[in-house]
Structures are given as C-alpha cells and as structure tokens.
Length: 361
Image (cartoon, rainbow, N blue to C red; front, top):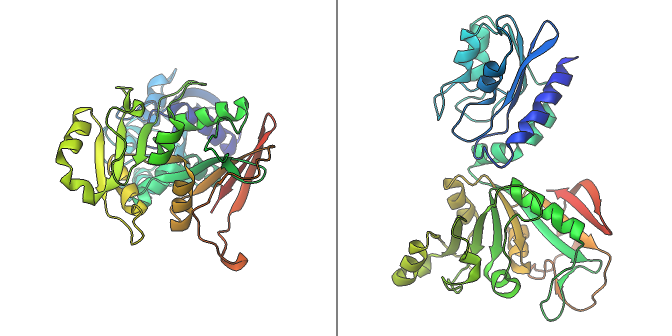
C-alpha cells in the first residue's frame, strides 16, 4: 500500500469521532511496520487520548522502527492531554506521514519540526485537500474564532419555503428529512429564528438516525418566546438564546431562563434593528461551538446571506410548485445581476424525488 492509501484509511477511521470530539479536530492514525498494519486508533472523545496514543496502545507489537500515518499534524503542546510528539519520540517511531499541518498556532509546523529534530523522518501534505476538508469546522474555528456556518434550506421548484398560511410541513421527502437529521448530528449547534420556533414549533433534535442532539441556538431579538415554550422542554439539551443588549434590563425574565439552564447571550443590534450576527457567532465560539447549521426561517437565511457570515449552503429542492408563498430569501434587498451573491456548486445529491445542491461561497 502507498502513503496515500494509509492516509485515506486514517481519514476513514477519523470520521468515527464525528459528534464526540468537538471543539477538537477529527483525527485517525495508522501504524505500519514491515508492510503490516500493527495498530490503529482515532480521537474518540474530547478530553481523552488523541488518535496517536490510541493507535500506539492498540499495537499488537513493539512500534519502534514503524511508520505512523496521521491525517493531522501531531500536537506539541499541553492541553487536556500531553503532547503526542513526546510519545512518538519515546516509542522510537521511525517515520511519520502527515496529511496536513495543524492551523492551530500552538502547533502549525512546530509538531513536525520537533519530530525532525529528534531524528524522525517526516513527510507532510499527503491527500492534503481531503485532510483539510475533513476538519473544515475545526480550521475555521481555530483560525477565525468563528463557527463554520452552513445554511440548510428546503424549497419548492418556485423557491418557496412555506405556503401563504405559513405551513411548511412537509416540503421535502422523508429521505431528505433523514439526511437533515444526519447533518444535525454532525454540527455543534442548530440556529433558528424566533418566528420559526413560534410558527413551526420545531424540535431541532436528531431522531431519524443515531447521533447526539446539537445545541439549540435561538435568535430572539426581543426575548418574545416565553421560558415555558416547548422548545425548551428537553432538560438535557443545551440551549442558547441570542438577544439584543437592550434586554439587559429584563433581569427577572433572564433569571427565569437561567434557572432553566438556558444561556442568554446579549449582542448589539445593527442599524436596521437586526442582531449583529458576527458578534453572535463570536459569542457562540466562546462556548466551544465550532460549527452551526442554520435552519430558518426566511429572515434568518437572508441575514446570513446579506452579512456574508456563512461558509456553505445546502439547498433542498422539492418538485412542487406553490405559486404564492414565502420565499427562501424574502428579506434580501433586490440587487443587480452583477451584485448578486455568487456561490460555487460543490456537489449534487438526490433524496427520493428531491435534489440537494451543496454550495460554497
């Protein structure tokens, strides 16, 4: 097998950590000696052993003289666990093949240099694009101090997300909804606006697949959703309400939310009275939210598009025509073709009769 083959395998086992390691990255590791895989491991849970340590501990024989393959540069600083580079040196690993360097400024090439200074052969940049893509959430979070933001919207062929009565259940197929639940399990948080909560009464949980429930983030400028609303009814869910700073005077109401374990994040308003989304995202990042799935509604979608504070758009299109109704980006101001938001098509998938366009900025 080639270096690329082993890194590809490391990427596959790294994915086993999805939903459990955030805000840490997804990392997989393979140890090869004399052409045989003698150990493998992945980062299983935040705060626990990194992939390299799990791979070493799983080894069926002495790892001295072996080659270690890992999709992300081994760490060289103390955090929840000791530096992985120390263990690689101590165990006399002969060669280390790294998919991509870590963008964390505490590492960022330092880990590789420490290994080379210790006499270990180091190769960097194997399947680099694939390795960066796997950890797009982590890299955005660690380099920008902001969560990776994906807008998820479902519309009819004529661009409607609800009929004239506000009913949106169900525009898309069961297959599409199952996939959305898989998406939710991958993201740290789901973001919705207060109108979506009051009209659609969404549960925002993972039900059609295995996986953790994401944190709930509700954009409620004026704190109009009462503390006894059913969206707050699952006590095990971690919930954040992002509201305007002007609500700081509503001390009794804020105390009610706090008593239920709900965190209130107060941020400034923009000149038009909408919440400052950049400030909101920075506050969420402080709570170790490194990825967010924006699920509605139209005003929230429009705000993220207008501000440019998104990385990806997953647009589900159902083969239905409503005519009049609520448009997906109804609150966006009109502009000329030359000034239109331009996205790049990354992928197209089919779910039943629906198609999903995966687009990036």
